[in-house]
Image (cartoon, rainbow, N blue to C red; front, side):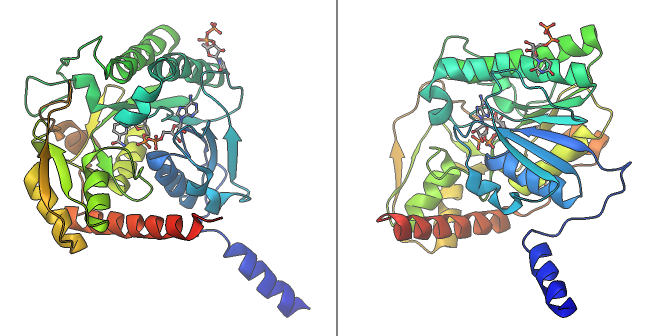
Length: 342
Ligand code: NAD
Ligand code: UDP
């Protein structure tokens, strides 16, 4: 019977990815809003494996349970179906505030909701941070720089945003979210961290988010032409695992001013299409489309601040990141094909 119990406990403990042991004083209670999304679920994995207690709050607008299902039932993990536009009363030490649709089709789907999530949602999370004395990290974006007039963009640049354009609900929403962070810092003493995240890719990204990596991989895997508009003539892409390491370093640093997290390595869009085509071993054609309105011409991060103050820079080679993402997309396509008649 003892042997049986031992094997049962072994198989039970193997149900979850391995988790480090942390002593009570090092273990933090961490809230991740938007934790069932692409970036949030990778952050959940890292913080869980590091041994922390993680609460994911998500309304499942663009996120999904499947992204975090491997933690469901773990004693350190909790998943709450909640919209951050509504107040939230819990006790935590740190808040990673990621809740917001991130890709253009998603945030343009309901611009008013995008504005509410980024404004009222951020206000609520700052109110929570104030009440419980937690530190809050805002997942801001390179979109605060708009269609930039300087290259590369450093954190001192104020941006060039069209306040009434189709992307404004997101760009201006994030800009005001940053403003709120610093108002709460100055007026209420809330500890804030602001990550200005540049375009990121990786497994669990939305397959139909309309951006270049997902478009090209899907098109190449399905043998369709790789299509793009000339306006986005340069691409720089960060892998989600590099981003997540940067977010955790920033949260635990003493830098309260905004920090760019992105990949400064730039490729022309054509190079990118050719690279993906060759990694997928696809015979797809490459095709140009007309320009999209207000699409930034070019965006490239200056990451000297992150390098100097956090010792952070992207480390995973582009091809390795793309290969992992291609594998994920193939598995997802297979999963969809197998489930379409259920
Ligand atoms: P995502 O869409 O995969 O994740 C966002 C998550 O937030 C989803 O799980 C969604 O369901 C949830 N959410 C949305 N509105 C909510 C609400 N009102 N209440 C609760 N949950 C809500 O996007 P992502 O790429 O993982 O982005 C995460 C964060 O990083 C976002 O704040 C985004 O603006 C920022 N960011 C991402 C990128 C990128 O390239 N992926 C670039 C810059 C900034
Ligand atoms: N809030 C929350 N959780 C908390 C504390 C506050 O969601 O634990 C919300 C609250 O509903 C409020 C917002 O955060 O609307 C801002 O809070 P703050 O205390 O700054 O403002 P006040 O409640 O004084 O208006």
